[in-house]
Image (cartoon, rainbow, N blue to C red):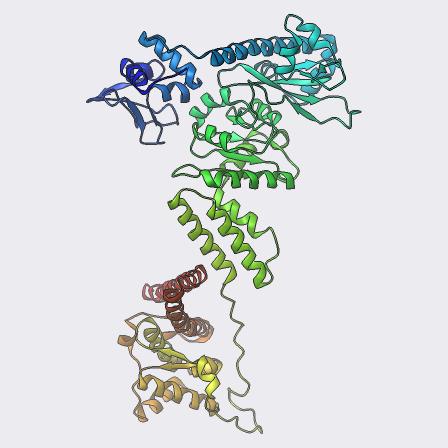
Amino acid sequence: MSLSPQWMDELRSRISLSGLIGRSVRVTKAGREFKACCPFHNEKTPSFTINDEKGFYHCFGCGAHGDVIRWMTDHQGLPFMEAVKELALQAGMEVPAPDPRAAKKAEQQKSLHDVMQAAQAFFVRCLAEERGGEARRYLASRGFPAQIVRDFGFGFAPESRTALKEALSAFPDEMLIEAGLRIVVEGKEPYDRFRGRLMLPILDPRGRVIAFGGRILTAEKTDAPKYLNSPDTPLFDKGRTVYNLHRAGPASRQSGRVVVVEGYMDVVALAAAGIGEAVAPLGTALTEHQIERLWRLVETPTLCFDGDSAGQRAAMRAITRALPLLRPGHSLRIVTLPAGMDPDDVVKKQGAAAMEGLLDEARSLVDVLWETERDAAPLTTPEDKAGLKSRLLAHCDTIQHPDIKSLYRRELTERFGELAFARKERPPFQPRQGNGPRAKGQPWKPAPAPLAEHDKARMLRIGTGPSSSLLAAVIDGLICNPQHVARHSEALARLRPENPDTCAVIDALLVLADSGQPLESQRLRTILLERGLRLPSAQDYAGMRFGFLGSGGDSAGEELAEAIALLVELPAVEEALGTATKRHEAEFSDESFAEQQRLLQRRLALLARLGQMGRARAAL
C-alpha cells in the first residue's frame, strides 16, 4: 500500500480535529481555538488546545501533541493503518489498494486472530469444567475475586498433547503452529504447547488476543518452567508488547501514572487491590519499544521491582535501556519493594495502602543509578573510586540528548566529588601541656618556639572580610574571658592576620597565657593598653553580638571554642578554594570542578553559620 504525502494531506484536511476529539472529550470554544482538560493526563484546569486551522492539538501541561492520525493511534489505541482506514471512511476517501503481499499478510493475521479467540474460548471453558478444579483452587488461594478472574480472562489448558487441536479442529494444524499454540519437533508429531497450566490471554491495544501466558500447577514438574509464554508470531512480538496496556491506558488517564511490575500475575494482584494502571513486560527486561509505548501514556512511568537481587538487576537493565532514550520531561521512577516480597505479598500482608505508600516514595532514575553503582563494589582505594567514576561517565555517554547528557554528567560528577573528596572531620582539640597556671614546685614552661620553615605552610593568613571580622570578635571575647586563652593557644598561634596591630595583640595574649599568671579581664585589658596595643571594638566585627562578648562561664567557653574552630577553618577553606579555582581554570577536569564546588559549598556553609551566630545573639 502506497500512501502518498498528498493523499495524507487531503485526509487531514477533510477531518475536523475539534469534531473528532469532541466525540470523546468535552471541548469549548476559545477564540480561534478550542480548549479541553487534557485526556492524556489528569488535570482540573484546561491546558489542552485544539487548532483546526493548523490541524494539531497540544497540551501545555504534559506536552501531548499530534494531528488526527496521532489522536487515533495515541488516544484510541489503533494501529497506524487502522487509524488511516477509520479516518478515510469518515472523510469519504478511498484508501489506496494494498499490494498483493500486504493483502495476504493482513488476511493471514485476521485468520490468526480467529484462531487465538477460539483458543481463548476453549481455555475459559476448561476452567469452568471439572478438569479445571485445580486451577480454580489456585485462583482462590491467590484471593482473586470472581470479577477479576472474568475481566482478565483466566482459563485452563488440560494436561493433554492434543486437547487443543481436537477442540479447534476447524482450523488446520499449520495455523495452530503459526499461532504458537502447537509445537513442531523434527521427527515427531506436533503437540499442544500449553498443558496442565493456568492460562492468561495477552491482548493487543485493541483488546484482541494475540498470545498466552501459562503458569504451571503441578509441583512435580520440577523440570518445567514455572511460567511459559507464547513464542513470537505474526501477531505477537514480546519485545514490543506491554501486558495489560489496553486496560492501563484509560486507568492511567485518571491516576496520572503507570506502574510497571515484573510479571502479569503481579498486574492481576494490583488490579484486585484497586491499582488498575499496572502493566508488565513479557518474560524479558523492559525494552526500548516498551518504554516508548509507556511514554505515550505518562511522562514518567513508575517501575516496581521485587526486593531481591534479580529485581535489582532488572531495575538496572531498565535504566540502561532508558538512558539513550531520555528526553526533556520523560524519565522513569523506581520503586524497590522490601526484600523477599513482590506486589502481591505487599498487598496481602500490609494492605493496598502500604503499596500506595511505596509507589509514592518512588525514586528518580538518577538517584537509583547513583546508588546502584556506588554500592556495586567497595570504595576503599583510589582505584576503586576511579572505577566508580568511570562507570558513571560511561552511563552518561549513552544519553543521546545533549542537554540531558550534560546535566547527568554534572549531577553524577558532583555526587562523586562529595564522596571521593569528602572533607575529613577535624580531630578534637587537645590543649597543650603546661599552658595553664603552673603547679606549685614545677618549673615554668617556655613560650612556643618560633615556627620552623616547614611549619609555615600551616599558617592561616587572614586578610579583610568575614574572617577578619570574626577574628576581631574572638580577640575581644578572649579579653573578656582570659581564662580560655591558654586552651586555644595552639589555634591562635597558627593565625597570621595581615593587620600588624592584630598580630601584636595575639602575640601578647599568647605570652601572657604562657606566663602562668592568673588573668582577670580588666587587668588584662590594662596591660595590653599600657603596651600601646590597639584593642578591637564592636566596629571591627560589624556590630554582631556574639554570646561570648557579654557572658562568662561555661557557655562563653563553648561559644568561643565554636567561633575559634570556625575562625581556623574559614581562612583555610578560602585559601584552598582559591587554589582549587586556579587548578580548575588550568585543567578544566571533572576532578578539579568537583573539588572547587565542594570547597565553595563548604565556604558558604561556614559563612552561613557565622551569620547565624551573630544574628542569634543580636536578637537577644
